[in-house]
Length: 248
Image 1 (cartoon, rainbow, N blue to C red):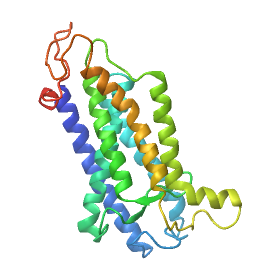
Image 2: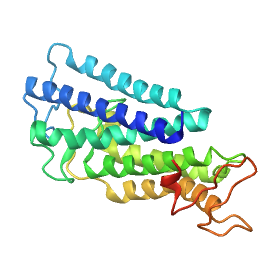
Image 3: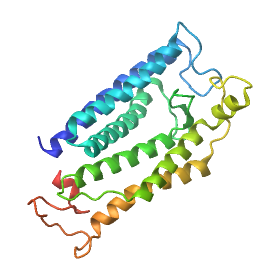
Image 4: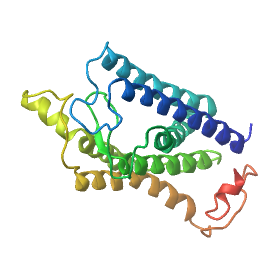
């Protein structure tokens, strides 16, 4: 199966999963009268829905990772396909919610993103931006992994990316974590009033560091012109910023 075919199948799966996710969220929000998620007690205790929803979220992540695992040929490409699937799924989840629920009205609307291990809150544009980065990073990694000698981010670049992930998670869960650490109130009922954009943006750019390192070292190798399209010693095409999509 060609890379183009693998990408197409993963994308189709992710879009279909997005519709399922949107439909389930519609059912849940109608059931608990929470079509607008930004309100106190976003997931009321209603027939054990809270526990079932947490397990469903974990199962969704497992399914997205599983399709990536099936599409890839080694650990890096499998994680890359999984990241691609997650990004496509997340973006189309919001796309499908608009006709189904009339929400979100804008990319700045608050959303309850995840419940594991605490509620994640953030404007819709934040997870969409992360999903776009995951799609770009995933496709770049998939393309690079075809080469005989793939280029990978250097060690400290991974540390920067890991620090970025930590900052973004904190930005999403800051209010819930604060309530939990103070042991006053219920972290599951907290309603944030302001999103910590400086922390989020710092984390976002740190997450971009390993992707940019990998892209830069691929495009600007010694003795190679950036943008040229040549064959490596396996006879396969090398990465080109102009023709990379066509080569899939």
